[in-house]
Image 1 (spheres, rainbow, N blue to C red):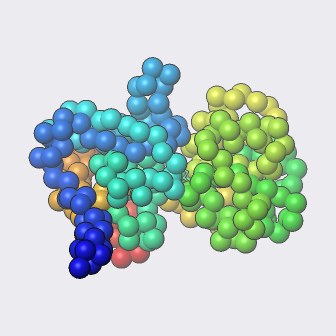
Image 2: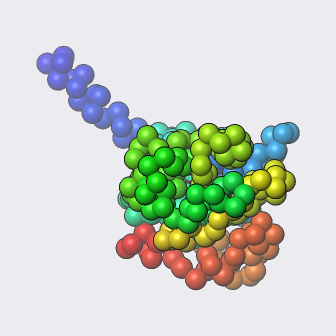
Length: 272
Ligand code: 6CS
């Protein structure tokens, strides 16, 4: 009898993360967001100030919803959804691109930030990489990408063996690994690679973009599957800001296109 009760108790445990209502967040006074610190999508300054297009949009929307502050924690892309589901974050606002398998796991807002994919390579692109398939075809080639990220998945799906896809924790590490010849290519979205190149100011590096055969992706803010009321409240404010031009005023200085986000939808990007 005792064993059965214990088993039942354990089975009940996963349901303890209750749906997050807007009133919960208002009472909390802040919204806990997961970010990656990958400018211009997300950025954390030396003094801890959080910026980047995704947190800036989220901060403005939550302020309008009556939640004055955002509190950000840096996470690897592959850990963001488990962290959200475990209740460590209230939302993911990090450029986490909408893809059907992610749409199964979270409740996405409507599109916010869209971008194509890029390669960071040595000047002159000596191995002539233009696609993930090119990297797969060269048995000596290694590619760096974020753990659990889209570029890692694209490389693996193109046939690059696991041991030639190197998980890289952040942009600066990826840049250094290309500079040191420890990887042949580092792959991130176009605007992220552009930001790294601008800051590095290294004439021995080059951006290849867009990566041939890779789609343009868009992110949305991601909420727990059961938090659809919160997601809908976010979407209502996002739609108003898209309509008024305030959305464009936030994201376009970072290099993103409001028109690109407004030309598509969660339904399309999630393959609904
Ligand atoms: O959603 C993703 O998986 C990708 N998004 C961004 C903004 N950077 C890299 C990451 O792999």
